Image (cartoon, rainbow, N blue to C red; front, side):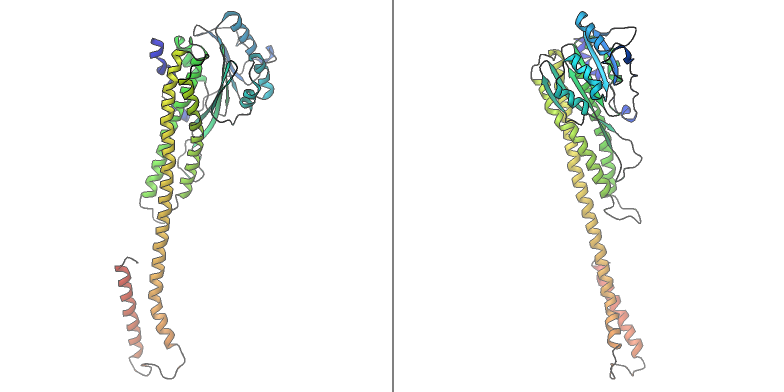
Length: 375
């Protein structure tokens, strides 16, 4: 039972700092010993009783599977962006379904859980927060990758796409907990799911900071020389990034619920209950992401409303000054007509009087408009 109590500690360290760094991949093993081996394999190991078997050299997938079938345990093979030719030998060795193999090679799949005979095929979307000094209309906020996991009775094959989402640190943490690894491939599958969802939580916190920053900028007094509504580009870009986040989170909820609720031969009963914890955390992240989308919609609408109000204020000012200028324009237009008999045309004080009338009328209109908030 100590394994169960320590399960979360084994697979759930703080992930927020790791989002800022790229983990170096494993070095590929020598492919000359097995035609089915490829440079796409970043690590291959056999585990028995929760411990990694030490060998003079990293085994090929074929050697690992032979050892498992002869001596027991399970094999964990990790690959990074394999081609069809590189993955073909492994697929034949482990009897993987062609449809799942095609999905694993070509990537860009929707998060899902599928069962092919005695193999579970799970697709996870990994999310990485992209650091930026300032959020702009072209800033990349989240970067996505994929982790596909083939889980059988005596093997786990992980296929990773993208520069992020390395499982190296996770493998090391699991190897430090032999009691957990002794539960077999289902323990690895749970650890990967928990690792991915914890990454979502950390990214959600970072995205929340960006949304708070945009919200403050929208509702604060604009700097001199800047116009209301100039944040629309940043808000729209952030909405696009949140949409990418939502595409990774929402489809994964149903597979996690199935793993936690439906009995499966390939999932250890002691591990299955902990998928419920992963599903609960994923549901919380999904609620946050949906809230982000709604909040950004409100912020965008408020920003556009502010821009409309600013335009209306500008139009009122323009209209007010046009009304003031209309007075001298009208009077001067009358006196500009070529008539012999004009009011006060021959009077000595006629010119100053007209200028005075123009000034008084314009001043009166200005006061009235200013009092009403038009100027």
